[in-house]
Length: 100
View 1 (cartoon, rainbow, N blue to C red):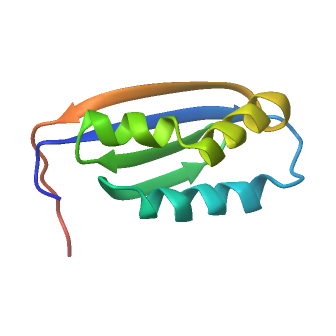
View 2: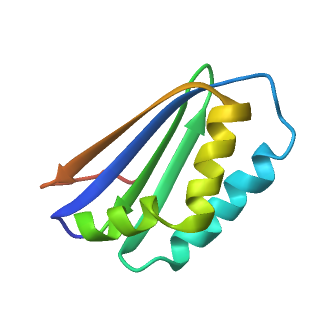
């Protein structure tokens, strides 16, 4: 990815409910990959979960947020899978990396 682009940072604390979570999570990643403007995703979970998705522009993020299936997953997350979560949207202006 070449900046500038946007990062949506989703941090969460899970409930103990596992039923359907992994399947929904995988489905949402697969669906996001098909969205116009999607650039990539990274995710990790320990005591808290962090998923960062990358997007071309704010319009792409808005369209994904309002996707009907994504809205249903958000409702289920609030009802079953999350004690709390936070979403942050940031403009990435610069990036660099290291690789062996």
